[in-house]
Amino acid sequence: MDPASDPHRALVPLLMRHERQIFAYIYTLVPHRHDAEDILQETCLTIYDKFQEFTPGTDFLAWAMRIAWWKVRQARQKYARSKVVFNDEVLEAVAHTAETMQEETSTMQICLAQCLQKLNERDRRMILTRYERGSGVERAAMVSGRSLQAAYKALMRIKQVLHDCVTNSMSKEEALS
Image (cartoon, rainbow, N blue to C red):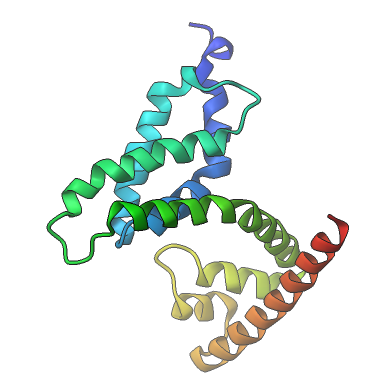
């Protein structure tokens, strides 16, 4: 098969662009991160299997989130024995809220990416290191060459700068729309 004619070739960039959003959506609906990660994997496999049913030019994220929704519903049977299980009405209300917040979240993510680019290299590397999966303040301190106490203070300052920048950017976006 000619690799250029493989219909799944278009899937990879779509999944890479939206994987975090799909994960965030799933994580709002299940109580534990590792459960959300498992459901994300199952969702991605189903997306791969059903990708020929996706219509190019339509909303891939909405389509993928609908698949995630059904994967969460299937997984709920596994959680039926756990102490915290949402009933269907609560689960649907949370899912609806997560879907409606998607646009706002996307705008916020774009603003955050722009604000991260405005930081100096040292601060940007430190905050990105801090929030890498499996990392923490200790690792961020080591990468930035700061003491642990200085790292905590720097992270607090950087987070405030980012918060102010994102808030200002969001206000400008709202004023334009």
